[in-house]
Image (cartoon, rainbow, N blue to C red):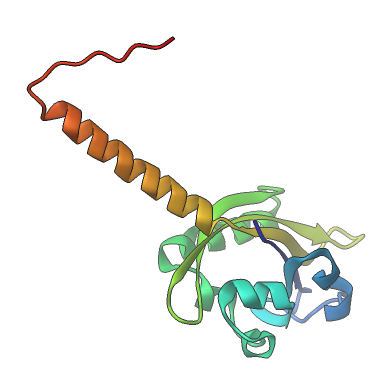
Length: 165
């Protein structure tokens, strides 16, 4: 599974704080990372996140996270960001879909939290994203198999017994 780290820097005016793009780079760990200013605009993206999303790194700069989040997941993500900013939650964890450059969906897990400065003001978001597309495909295949088996059992006129040793 591939992981991605998400960082966003902000201050009261919505301008990037003291986190530099190079200070959040995680290329050497094999995980994806990005920096994101409010209202969610990427200012730094590493190669792993670009690979997961099917973009060149430079092409993601200036995109908003809202542009690449699946529409069915967006309201929940925005609500979580607000909860983090208000201090209502300290960590956000969820399975979420991103929209790749080619328009396809990719399933991920995200764990995010807000880092505050010494005064307690929001500074930037940090998070980890894992590509779980293969797991989701395996879950769908298992569900389809179970449904086929259930259909065969429910529609057969012959009774059978399954013994366990």
